[in-house]
Each structure stands twice: as structure tokens, then as C-alpha cells.
Length: 134
Image (tube, rainbow, N blue to C red):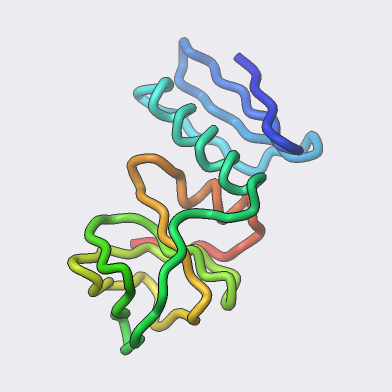
């Protein structure tokens, strides 16, 4: 199956679960998924966010300590913080607004994406950002 979103092309082999994303005929992401339907759902959601230009839910950073940050709205869940200031996708585990980060500190320009619906590795590759994950 082939799909095109903006300048990205994705292909999935349902037999093997192999999913590949290309930009300009150059592979930027590949994964073998045990559940190809879930994998392609996450890939297509991620690409749609990148093409749209606004990735995830916009957050306000209240404070940032060494490996933690307090954000508003007070989110709970595991996912990634897309940091536009540092040009990075940072792994985060959040509970009522307190986030433990996979990077020492983050900037004020951040958004949150949930790991169940999006793929942080693909987002970082498509945006050209660094990836810091647990």
C-alpha cells in the first residue's frame, strides 16, 4: 500500500509489517511493526501533523529544572515534547503537569504529542530535529 501526504510517501508491506517513509525519494524512516495497521495509523497521523505545520498540543512551560519541567495545561501521559526552540523531540513522562524529561532542559516553545497516536522518531526525522528518548 502506498500513501502520499505532502512531500512524504509512505509504503507498507502488510505481509511483513515493514513500513517505510520517503521524502524526495530518500528514506527517512523505516520500521517493522507487529501490527501494521497500528503502525501505519501512527505514521499517517505523524505526517499529517508535520505537513499541517502545528505538531501536537501547544503547552506553556512554567518552570524547568534539571530533568523535569512543569507545564500547563496539566497533562498526564507518556509521549514527546516537540521543542521548537532547541529543535528537538524530547521523550517525556508527565503526571498532572510535572514532566520527567529525556533531556536536561527544554525551551519555552513546546508542544506535546501522545505516543499512542504519533511516532516521535518519525516526527524528529521529518522535522529535521534531534531525538532524545528514554
